[in-house]
Length: 266
Image 1 (cartoon, rainbow, N blue to C red):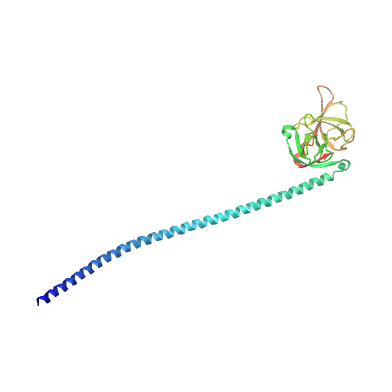
Image 2 (tube, rainbow, N blue to C red; image 1 turned 60 degrees about the vertical axis):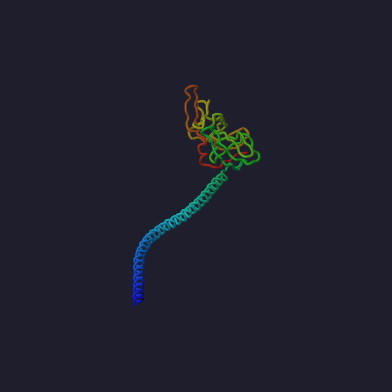
C-alpha cells in the first residue's frame, strides 16, 4: 500500500515536471516566434528598401547607358555631318576653281603670252606689300615675271625656290611699271605709293591727254605681256608745287582676295 502510494507520488511528480517543461517550452517558443517575427519584419523592410533602391539604381544605370549610347550616336552623326560638310566645301571649292580657271583660259590676250597657273598661298599686303604663290618647279620662271589675277597685273616675282615664290605687289612703294594708255597709246611710268593708297603717275605736262576712267596696259620695249591691264585712272589732279598734273591710278590689287589662283607670265 505504501509502495503504491509512493509510486503515485512519483507519477504525479513526473507529470507535473513534464507539464512545467511543456509550459516553459511553450512560453519560450512563443517568445522565439515573436523574436523571429520581429526579425522577419525587419528583414522584409530591408528587403523592400533594397529592392526599391536596386530598381532606382538600375533605372539610373540604364538611363546613363542609354544617354551614353545616344551621345555616341550623336557624336558619330556630328562627325558624319562634318565629313559631309567638308566634302561639300571641297566640291564647291573645286567648282569655284574650275570656274576661275575657265575664266582664265577664256581671256583673249593670254593666247599671245606664255604663262603658268599658280595658287596664291597667302598675302601679307597689310605688312609687307607682298604675297606668296606656289610654283612647284615650273620651267622658265625668272625674276621679274608678272602675276595676273584675272583682272589685271598685281605684282612681279622677286624671289622663288622649288616650292614657292614671293611677289612684290604693284602698289609697293618700291614698285615701278611701264604702261600705256589704252585709248591713245601714250607711254607712262606708274609708281607705287603703298598698298593702302592709289598709285601715281608724276611729272606730266598739264596738257597731257589722260582722262579719268582711262585703262592703263602693261608695256615694255620687248612687247612682253602685251595688252595686260595694270590699272585704271582714278583721278587727274593739278600739281600746285611743280606744275603739271598728277595722275591717280587705281590698281587691281584689292581683287586678290577674290581669287585663289593667278597667272604667272613666263
